[in-house]
Length: 342
Ligand code: NAD
Ligand code: TYD
Image (tube, rainbow, N blue to C red):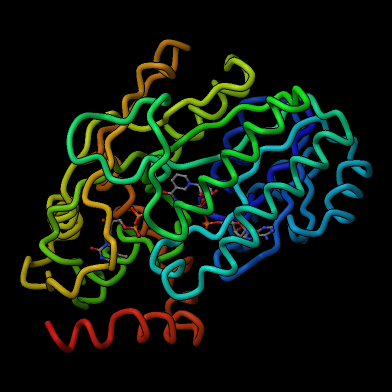
């Protein structure tokens, strides 16, 4: 395994993963294959292109386009696919589920089919803890049933199942990781931590859904990337591995850390109408991945604070996104009524 196709590599986690892998493995070659939706940005990889020009290439393409996927595998003699490409935001999946089914389900099938045709050494599916649905008590183990509740998590579940089906039916060498909520550099400011950090920097309200007592495991993105790396190199074929800190916090605790890190007042907190079908709690049992020698370096609190500091220091990255028309329209649709009513 030395020549990787990182699909969705211009997004948040994929760009961090690409940088991490090229730094760690001097003999690896990576092609980022990305459609560049609203969430994908060439800028996220600008330093990568400069530092690793001879071991890195970028191809703009859709994972649903079988012909282009196959051509890219052939052109670059790739041996592995790591699939990050997806529509990823739960709130958007509630208003536009079709694109989630298209990319997260059909696109996964296209990649699996290409991996089978070209007899790749590995297909790795980047999945999510959301496929377990909400877990009110205890922790989700890899053997727990799928109970997705949003169009996003239902689509990701279908991607997981298709991945496992290709392993069972044709022996395709697959692995799956299910990550908890990631935070870190280059996360599009629709997700809660970058949204709250950038709003707070501008003294804008922080729209907390409902009572804010929902529970999430906020892990630092590089801990997740390291987990995927460990599974790629030491994971068992056909197996699933959870990746997270293994501890959690409530959203209101996370919000207070954002404000405290920036020295902003709690009066910026606005409780707004809840997300429909909002999963109350996610919590992962990460012992299976730990048994492979992986360990998480940052706690949720450290991960959130470190992320907030990055947004404070990198306004040049997020200001152009937030001042764009696309983002403004999204923000208005998602929050204007909620904030007025709160
Ligand atoms: P993101 O939204 O930041 O990036 C997604 C990337 O995929 C973008 O670059 C986008 O352009 C690309 N993309 C979308 N549709 C595509 C298509 N049809 N063809 C090619 N490229 C396409 O997402 P992220 O937060 O980096 O998440 C990456 C993966 O990790 C996803 O599969 C997601 O389900 C999973 N995941 C995310 C989290 C999290 O907290 N963000 C947690 C666990 C798992
Ligand atoms: P999000 O970052 O959208 O990730 P996910 O829904 O995939 O876990 O949201 C994280 C948590 O923050 C989730 O419980 C919903 C909550 N949230 C808010 O309270 N307000 C917001 O504006 C957003 C976007 C999320």
